[in-house]
Image 1: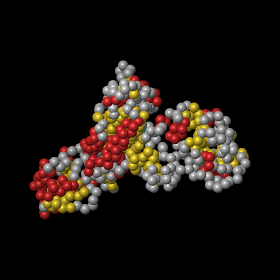
Image 2 (image 1 turned 90 degrees about the vertical axis):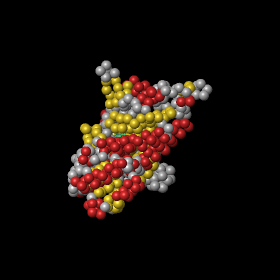
Image 3 (image 1 turned 180 degrees about the vertical axis):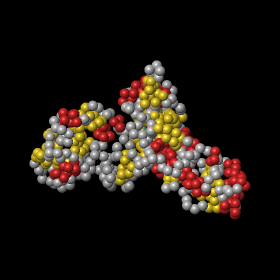
Image 4 (image 1 turned 60 degrees about the vertical axis):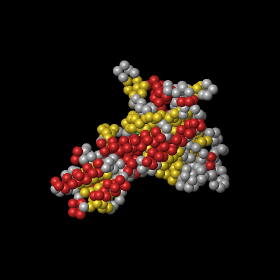
Length: 564
Ligand code: ATP
Ligand code: MG
């Protein structure tokens, strides 16, 4: 490809709205252009990378025995009503009507669509196991589209769904995908950290997310360097420290605390530490009030709380509800005596001695609070978030926190869709069986961005070979028509040899061409310039290395074959 005829609008300056490096570099290197918030067009160079990743994903899916489909992106509301998600999906789903008033969703995911289709394609145990997939656009009305293609309103996903006769079969299908995912990211040159992930209110089943460690990641990971426990903070457990030493029980006393409300203020006021406070927060779980109590040094983990309450929606209760259930303004809730609503205590609460908590009265707290004596722990669960240096739940060694970008997610769905959508097959004995499902997603665009986050330097992108838009970047530096013709001839030679080459034949300065070459990051750069015209030496430089090597024209193709 001749660059003089190509559409490659590289930019010297960072776009003003790009805050993460992948977004900046993808715009500057001419891979994408913004259409509007959360919507991006891929230019030819970017589309090449996207296609390479799609090819790798498809290859590994096919190897794993999955079957490729192409589903409509417009999905009928009736399908979503069968699973119930038409009513529960929330504002992320784009909903539209046709001219006759029929309702559709622009598919944010395709569990319903595939379950509905596969239901009509399978009838017997002989048809199972089966894993189906597609590589197709998804639409999500994200609350905050950001970071370029990392979180956009429209993106390409590879989504796969497995159908098995039983749990053992599901586990085999799941493991096959687990293996394929590792292979896919490895082939993309992307280092991922697979972590245990939250399975939602369903609970019980396996779920793994593939994370790319990055400061700009929105996911928080807890990693144990000793035993290898790795989990998303949404799910991560941690070892609890038992109460150390005896403490003579103090008397429960009311203390006037006018205008002392935050844990920080209270810590100062009482001259103590946050772990002795019982922080009590009122939520609405499926619309009904419930209280969660954790120690003041911890944050409530709403995923864990949701699971322990078994609810599908959870939100902070509005002030009016707090006032109604506690009889006090916000800031004075506590478990002594508890309001008559469900209360969940975190596992650390029982370790507190002579603690402090709100007295369910305006401007009053209790001191000398002792669990068991002053209140009963009727329901106890792990509802706090693990943080840096918390003990690993497996080996007890301190864990570390890292941020990550989620690029893929595999999940055992169980019967969540197959049951309400009435998928059945006949088993060996002619009895009707509901297949058990798994689902497996990879964000293709987000993967491109994650690769750029992980493989860039101050000058631009450094593509791994497998996903680079071209294999070789030929830079011609010629002053005369004869010299240009000589570089053209070498370009012809490389093309004839089947080398995927981008040829910078533009009439521009060497500095300009080299800067563009570094910015777009093709792994191998070949320079034909003064050295060639004077001494017959062609320069080969790898993007990730500093110094070039020289080769003679006769050896060029052989050397490039070795490199690409
Ligand atoms: P997130 O928590 O980041 O919103 P998700 O849990 O909603 O992700 P899934 O529904 O599991 O994501 O989708 C599978 C994959 O699709 C994700 O692992 C991610 O790579 C990609 N993905 C999800 N939402 C977006 C988006 N808005 N833009 C780009 N890629 C996305
Ligand atoms: Mg999401």
